[in-house]
Amino acid sequence: MKTSFIALAVAGAFAAGAAPAAEVIFGHGANPGNPRYVAAERWAELFAACTGGAHSVNVAPSATMGDDVEMLTSTVAGVMQVTANSQGAMSQMVPEIGLLGLPFLFADLPAAWKLLDGEVGVMLDARAQQAGLKVLGFWDNGIRHVSHVSKNVPAPGDVSGMKIRTPPDQMTVAIFEALGAAPAPLAFSELPTALQSGVFDGQENPLTNIYSSKIHEITPYITLTGHKYESTPVVAGLAWWSGLDEATQACALSATAEAGEMQRKLSLAAETELRPKMEAEGVTFAEADKAAFVAATSSVYDAYAADFPELVAALREAAGQ
Image 1: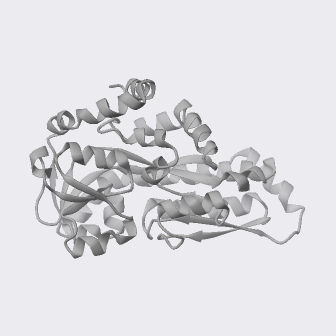
Image 2: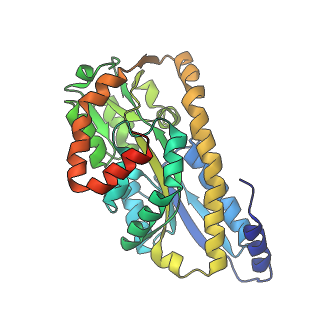
Image 3: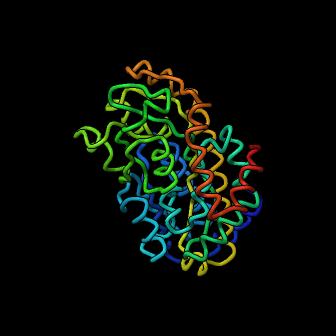
């Protein structure tokens, strides 16, 4: 998406002022090479340019401001202003966002994006504001797959008993409990050490996260389960957001949309481009028995439909299930 006419006009309005730049801290947990990392750098450029230099952006990548939960807490408190965060961590504050990760809900990434860019995204923003956060937009965190230190897991029975790291996301835990695994949440930044020490047999993530963090070097067996989708909600502290004038708010929204379009394209491309690159580096891929996995995780829908009957039904209908 090209920079909007509104954003260009806003930049011109800011250029007339000469006050010292106000610093915005933008935190995230991704490493260099990850689409989230690239998009955050682009966001900083776009936002600073749009405000005519009235705001500067300090991007804090690789969980240098803490893990995702800590960054959300810091954003609400005003310690930092914006974070490109995780669906799992966000679900602790906005439970409804966790439903985007219902097993095998979306056929592909564009289907998820269409839903998030519509009424569902508006609803999640309203709920987030009740928790002290303003949703600026939804970037992508991919369709997730399972990687293991010593074997592929193409059938649900292969996952039974597996010690698997999950993000701090009850939905992911529920999926792997339904499969008979032994899931346990852990901050992503601590995952490589935990895998190397044998605390876990494996983990689950989109290919782009696995590759950019070199987790494929520790868990060289990847099964393309595609068991769930995760977004990357880009959120601002509501107190900070409410103190901005409309022009600066427009800049933040415009930067999020433009950087997000790039980030989504990079994420989509990674789905196909990374496999041959990872195979060349020694990864063994396997296709999962999707029908068997869908059947084995159907109880997750029943459990969440008990608490969110209307939303679960609406999500399934919108996703074409």
